[in-house]
Amino acid sequence: MPAFHRGHSAIDDQCRQSTSGAAVVSALCWYSHIATPMVSQMNYAKIIYAQTTPLLDRRARHIPSTRAAAGTVQGMLTLARLTQVAPEALIDLMNDPRVRRHMPLATGVFGPAECTAWVAAKEAMWHEHGYGPWAFLVDGEFAGWGGLQPEDGDADLALVLRQAFWGHGRAIAERVLAEAFGPLALPAVTVLLPPSRRTAAAVLRLGFRPDGEIELAGRRFHRFRRTAPAS
Image (cartoon, rainbow, N blue to C red; front, side, top):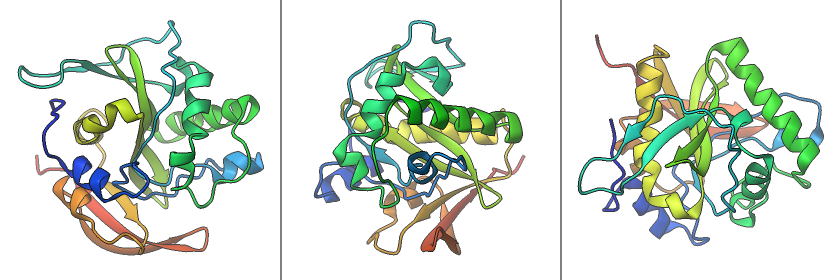
């Protein structure tokens, strides 16, 4: 299982390249497909790192997790469902201006009503497809959300992390991939990058390879794919 390293990583590469201070590793258009205008557009478009207030519902139950190895950032990574996180934590993250500037399809305010509908739409993905987004907890503290979401027949990967957890991005991404190719038994995972992205180095380091282009909501994206390892 991946450890949380503070040293050089693909995530750190993108942090240094971002003029806004938010590390953008992947661009995905994650649409919730529900009627609320704000929520229908505000679905994760990138592996982004942002800052919020750590608000965690005490009722959150732990799902199989990973403990960091010696010599790394000490902390236990837990994958929880979005329903197990206090709505205030998600609302703060989704309204952070450093996140919104990387979400060209996001409009309006993401408030309590929008959050409720958005979480319900994400939960529906688990029931329909058998996978969906998680909330990420490190030692019980809300670190962000992301994971996998169905998009155009593929399972797409994206992460959205609080600033305090920027250095954990690659480890969390690798954990998600381990879930995808392990318990979930998915044949492949994709990542989408907009043509404006100057480099795909971070995605390539995670084992993804170019796989053509795709159009979502009238926008073109470069698609990268990582297939499940041979058994």
